[in-house]
Length: 256
Image (cartoon, rainbow, N blue to C red):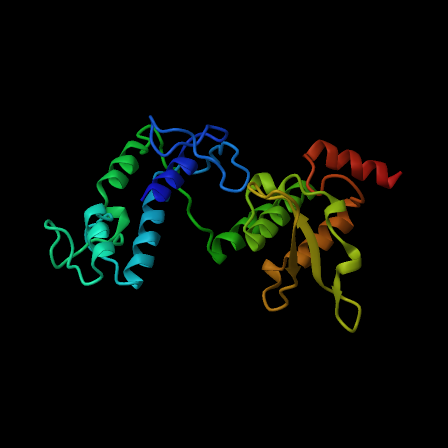
C-alpha cells in the first residue's frame, strides 16, 4: 500500500517536489544510489488516480486478491515461526495473516491519501474526437480559401490526426525533421511512406514515425497533401508550417 500511495503522490505533486510517503514522513530514497527522490508530476486530471486504482484492482483480482485489504500480523508470523502448523494468533485463529491479502486500493490509508490528493480547483476540458466527415468538412473549408497558408493548416491537421500529435508537437515541425533517405517508394518511383521525427510533450528524445500514403481515401492522404503543399510553397528549410507572413516571404524569395 505504501508503494501505491507514494506513486500517487509522485504523479500528483508538482514536478521536483521531494517525494514522501505521507505529509509527515521522511523523504523516500532511491534504492540504487540512496539519493532523495523527487516527484514526476503530470497527473492534473483527478480521473488519472481512478484509472490507476482500477488497473491495480484488476491486477489483484486476477490473482484472487479481492475484498478488504489485510496487512501482515506480527503475532501470526511469530506463531508460525514457533510452530509451522500454527493456525495464527488468538485474534486470527484459522485465518492467520502471514502475508498481505485483499485489494490494496480498499485500504483506509490508500483511500484517505487518494481523497486528499483530489484537486477541487481542476476543471476538465472537453476533448471530442474528429470523425472522418469532420475532417472532410475542414478540408473543404480550408482548401476553398485558395490560400497556401490554409492548405498548410489542413496538412498540419491531417498529419497531427494520423500521428495523434498535439498542436505544440506538430507546429514546431521543420523540414529537417524528415529523412528522405528513409522514404519508401513504389516500384514506379512514387513516394509511399515518409519518415519523420517528433519530440513529444513527455519524451526525453526524438521519436520516429511513419506517414503512409492512403490511396483508397486521397482526401485523407497525409503524404499526398504534404508533397503538394511543399511543391506549391517551395519550402526547403525551417518550419514546415510557418505563419502566413513568413510563408509569403518564403514564396517571394523562392520566386526570385
